[in-house]
Length: 93
Image (cartoon, rainbow, N blue to C red; front, side, top):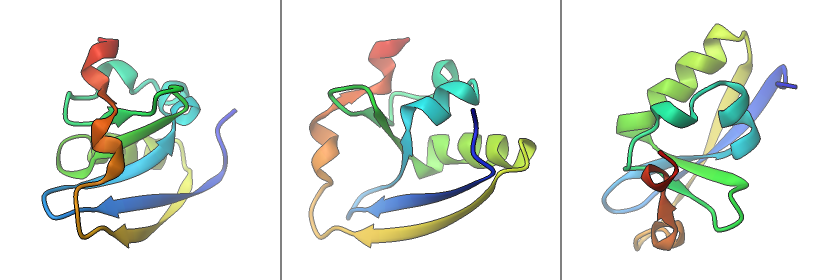
């Protein structure tokens, strides 16, 4: 079941920014097949890291369409984010 509100974490590294979101939410919103190879998934497949420029708008639009209130907080990383070592979402497609 989708929440009525959601706090999302944004990771910003020197090259890109990514929205961290539960895989369950991505799946419930029907976004998995729409995501690009620019985004990542955790080894246990429980967390997605959506590249903001390419896939972030899909999440924001879907949350808005489902009347889910959301807010962002952020972490700025001086080096590339650790999850860039994970598989890209493209392997799911």
